[in-house]
Image (cartoon, rainbow over all chains, first blue to last red; front, side, top):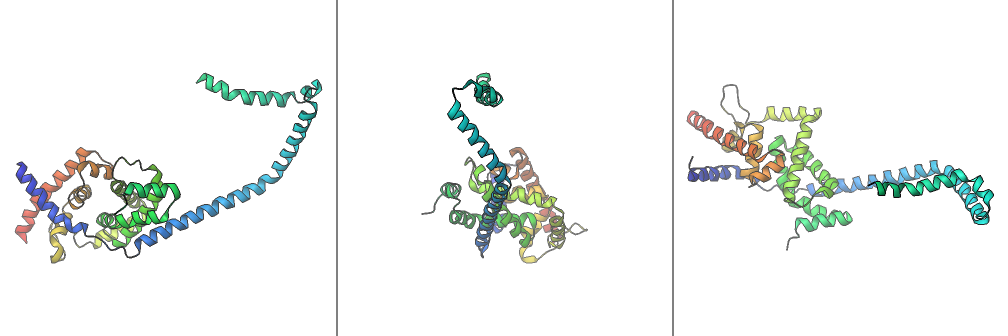
Length: 111
Length: 182
């Protein structure tokens, strides 16, 4: 098929197909979509807040015990930081804290 | 002056601006609904799919890289939504019903029936396979380049060209026969 024939073919086909691209009136379609999107956002926020509240309720007591315990340890640390007996009493905690601090640095060095 | 798609997209991404998103939907709803009507052949189902398309556009907007046209990206999502809906059983039943009711479906004798007023285009579409029809609608009705059509359909450019070539030959051959018979 020559180029001219091909171009004529394309033009004829485009002319036939152009009816398929007649603009459709919006008829409230956009509003419907925007409202649906807004509803989804509202639901997402509501679910997020509910999950946070439920999670908070479950975590409240354990968090309370943890913070009380932590404050006791910090108090001890502040009062007896230079007492060698303190080191003996909390040596596992101290070791765990040192390892936790060292791991990110070691990982970076290994990279 | 019209605000560009990119500016509107960045507004939606920055502050989840529903007004900017509404402008984008208003700009492309006609094309997307037309395209889905071509695919699904059922205006109600097409509108349902078009809504799903724009909701997905809202959800996935952060993945739009801005490399191609925003319109092609939306059309690609519409095509994916259509293909997914074909896989879902409920909609599949409706699609089959819509296609059975379609006045352009070929009869057993190999001729085409339909409304005489719109028969030319419908008769032509009826002789094409789905892929040929989709590729030809994108390129001839919406003026997409082969590359853009390949992006939308998720197939290589060469395959789009083959579909169009085969479709054109089929239309040319079958149309002559049908015109002669009419």
